[in-house]
Amino acid sequence: MSLRRTKGIVSDSSSSDPVKEGDVLMTAAALGLAGDYIAREKKPLQFDMDPLDAYNPKEQSKAALFKTTVEKMDAAVAAYLTKKNLAPSQVRAGLSPGYWQGAMIMGVYVLADQTRPKEWTPGVIASPLEPPVLSRKGEALWHQIKTVSPTLLQYTGRGAYTGFVDNKNTVGDTDPVGPRSTVRMTAPPPGAEAPTIVPHSRWLPPEDHTLWKPRKRKGAETYVPWGLIGGDKAGQDPAAGNDTRATNLADQIELEMRDRYGMVFTSDLAVTDIAAYTHGMIQAIYKAYTLGPSCTPFEVAVGDQTKKMASCLPCTLFMHAAGYPPSSIHLGSGESWAPLYSPYNPNGPTEPNELGVVRDLNNAWYERCRQWLDIGLEILDDAHIAADHKASRDAVLDYVRRYGSDPTLGGVLILDALTLHDSETNKIGRTVR
Image 1 (cartoon, rainbow, N blue to C red):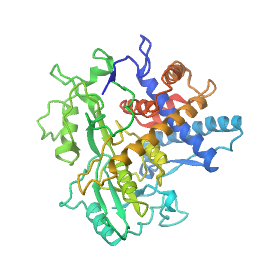
Image 2 (cartoon, helix red, strand yellow; image 1 turned 180 degrees about the horizontal axis):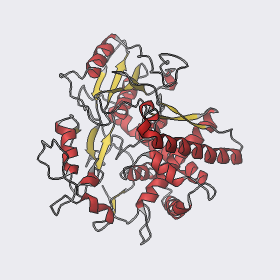
Image 3 (cartoon, rainbow, N blue to C red; image 1 turned 180 degrees about the vertical axis):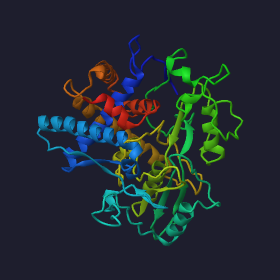
């Protein structure tokens, strides 16, 4: 995997600001998705906040920022669509469905006439969604997943959603698939790329970049690898209850994710590697597409640390590109999110056509990411870009124009932006005027 060791994600000067460039990239992706969806479908696109946050007295500043950010998105998209004579706009803020043990986010395969689960109590704000009607074997596996059966290996820590595929095939393979929890990989795994075009080079800050300072291990001369969740806490002492023997908080977080909460790490990471996390829903979509239209991908909420029943923005981009839009979208974090680059099967066999599915869905995602970035950057005109982000927007525009012939460019730039960890609400709120 080749690397770009530049001061910014897309620029390399003394004034380069990778955080603002990442803000622009993720904002453009979100605005591009919204503008494209509304123009195509002639209906609003809704971003949802966790009702547990929305009604928490301690989170009212977060709720206010979310509402203001979505309102700014709506105004920017409306101006774009009006100028294009495409459609009236409505990017709206809502609440994700309520949580219950075993609640699921669904990837709705529209082409197979699948529909979003119904609300349990129609008309009630943030009503939980009804449990889907599953196959007999799917029902049994879902019960094991939602009760965190000790016979299954699944991640139960922060951000714990388990991928699960219900299989209603009547011939051939009729087994459900799961659990498929978030897995940490190397981006992209060495030698594991699907047989397709070589991805655009990934961005890694130069060795002397200020972004490495919080990633230097406390009391040591070593650094944690780029992209690790919690990696910017390497200079801090471990938290109370540290059973990992880690000397700093970053290493403690990683070791607890693996040893206490069960996340699979498929490889060790060197300081010149980039950590990548592939979520359960994305793994489920590859598998559901492989097995056929009678299969439905879900994510099941497990553990007690994460309860918002909505897909993150990076998952949402992939799901729309693959034809499985999510049942709800949030604007939280998708830290170092990544697709698969080759089949990954911690349980169940690898299907003969699975490598081709990974290739084809990734190529569809690359193509749509570039389209959404182009639309979003157009929406982020001088009237709608925050003054302190204008130079970064111009740098992104210049880079996209210079490397526009690379079909993987859009997806890779989004992956680079996702290694700068923050909620999408914050990124978009900083970027849109």
